[in-house]
Length: 529
Image 1 (spheres, rainbow, N blue to C red):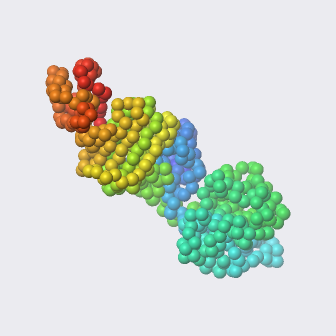
Image 2: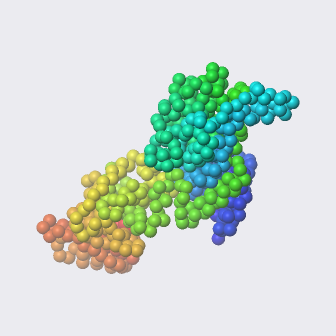
Image 3: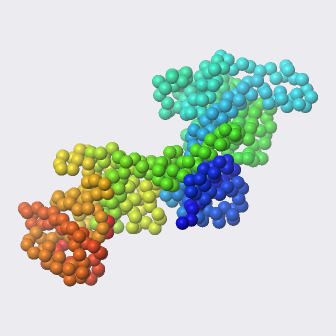
């Protein structure tokens, strides 16, 4: 059996290849492949690891039909089209912890470089000048540092700069006042951070909310002469506005490690050459320790994900991440089996479904719906369907799912019930877990019935009268089809019954026509679970 191929791009530390090869994969280092070479290698790749250079877009994804996982050796995933990856059922993961220390330290270094004019002073001395007075600096002690984004990197900057005697204020909508206080940070609204800060350092992802966070439009909110630092993502500062804000004194000094386009294009030349700008070529995570750390982490994460052992760092796989949880696994499987069963019973034209969850099933309703849809779409979508892309594909087909939760009194407390519009034979299907790999239908419409969701079967409604089962059994026997098990659901007062017959092989079209012709047989369906 050939080994599964994983491509390591963008100069990933070779330790990643060593780890993946040890775990039985075929890891291939491709630091700077040509487009033709990359396209050829992608054909067999089940995983790829990138840094920030390679763009994982629709074009790349289409060239990789076997791809299961994209790993980002680092935090930011701006270069990865997560929506397109999700549509293709590809897991995207990053290593949020690997370069925390390196990036925090680099941000602190840039802060100190700004206040003490270190880069300009170094250049001046190297050019033969002795400009002590020209490069008079300021202390950070007693100054206010505003941090936008208080994740691990932002918090790390706060911790380090607090040791220099700075007052730390910060903004982060996901940080609690109590947690901020533990870190020695006064939590404020964003406008207050802008107004009070002598220095602002940003540590957020690039989103619609953070793009152009600082620009001419909001310059009046800034403290006059503020110093700005960006070691996060290019585009958080509106680069086209920075020169004028520097020239009019709104910003006294600016430090950049990241850019909207990397390497920066010619249009940023004036900004980068400005005497009050310190700029570095995306060095935040560029330490030996960080590069080795993220390479080790992403290699282990990728291998675990492909082997379905763990999904740490996954960004678009909430449901698949729970698939390794032993308490959730049985209900995920039940939901998937119900999806496969329901599409065969309801027909392909059903667009509106309601799924009711009770007991333990209600706790994980969202991910169980993903599993249901993976089963439901399995036979009607040309693309591979899994827990990652099932909901996306369902939306694309106009399938609407409404989830409800509640407790149900009765025999089965942990129940999944699928309610179907009354256009087919059945309007309600309920399933429950009975034990290891034992998933059963326990009710169809209002009739209690119990049978396993496994193997081949025929399911039919019939008039509840003597001889019906004998007639069907006789026809099966005549066609050499053996009955493995059967289950009956009936209510005497309505003279209607449901019969599920598990058979050893699928019933032929001719046999189904014969059974359907029997008087009293209604809604006959052949199913495979």
